[in-house]
Length: 381
Length: 224
Image (cartoon, rainbow over all chains, first blue to last red; front, side):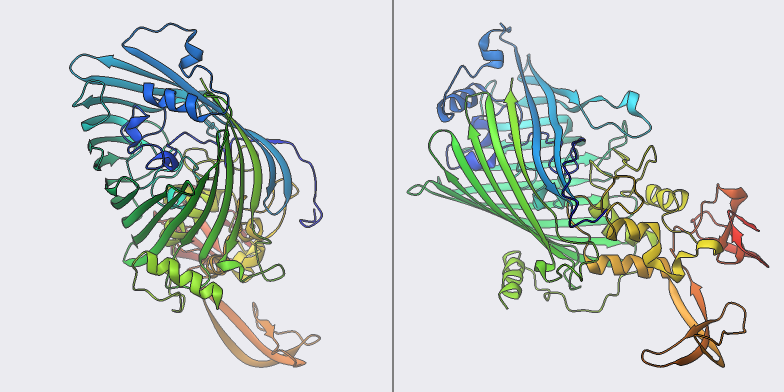
């Protein structure tokens, strides 16, 4: 088939070769622009997943049409010690790989349970569908991506000490929900790289620190094959600006890596724009050979009326900075529309350039670069 | 100029002192490096050829995010073949591994070029070709050859310089092709072919003891 004239409308149902399988992390766009910490709106110290009461109120107020933000619109009575939630996502759109497809695929179908226990303890469990493993389909339709026991200094508070043990994503960097961002895919927190570990975290309005130790998941065939540790600290210099530092050490059977990086966020009140930057230098060692990588992401977010916000992101990944032609850049433009407190629609687009686009058709061995334009539907239970 | 500046700004932002990519490619040609630095980040993403998903054509589980998985995938599914009847080091671009990376639906399976999301950088494709080829040495018997005058030395090929009508007969020797993923010690009774030579396959998935030169082809762990 000719890649240039393929132009086929090929309905493909596959679990996320591109943007698929988005297990929800946070929308860091709201931090500083709408509140100071992730825990202001989320139950988990790293943000993402289930909303707390304040998060629900925010979703109701920010969205265009409001609606009751509680689980199932508050129609399902729950005991005071139990909180339930969930996320359903799917995507449909155009994908150039370089062959051109119209694609439809599920992204996420998960439910969350958060049980309040005595002595400031909480049990948090995320369960749902996962991409099946070829040859082991029967046992891999469902899983629990996250499950951990958490102690918090304040019983229902969003600040102070948090200690967690269980399965979760090491807390590192800005933690975008969009897993194709280079700082996630190549930055140590790629999709489904949750693993078993323990974390000690301290969060205040002014600063927060997260230290996580983790091991390779011994139970399933995992995404992350490392043991290691991660640190992330963030200091909010003023209520509208923060700087952060990050470090991660990982060791697998075939390599070890040290990541060091910085983050910065600046919210401009007048234009209602948030600027975010994360940059990492990665030192990878494979046997006796060492190399240095660069991973960075810059995002500008413009908040608009009626529950809309627009992200424009530029990502950069250099696989080995000493060798020419191994760098790539991605331009992402995402328009989010929080229609109600439960329904979000997203237009997400990306174009990716290899070697700054210096190699072009005719010389690109792999053909033209990739890109997509997808419409996502997200329903929060 | 602008492109170079943009790139250097990114690097400056990350406070690195390294240059903007200028050194000759000195990457080690072995399976560990190929896996950890090239295949795992590019092909072994969670939803693709990871241990977690093991996506592959049909029911073939391809895994590129671990050394064990990469070796098994390369060898068992013929992504690089070292048998004499399809000796990929002689023409790495024709190996299934490179074909998947450079052609659209190369095997008429309805599966497009890999990776799906963005092409692999040219430099990495060339690096994989170098890895498949290993270290190549050429020896010549001094005989002259041309399109109509074949080489007489067994295994020799005619190397004609660009623009010339005649050339020299050369014999190429491939040292460590596809190093680290040459054979599976548990397949074919632990025997493996590198071109027309039969070897014992070692536990490091490289051939070890030379057993014999085959008079004809060598394939599937035996002389044919």
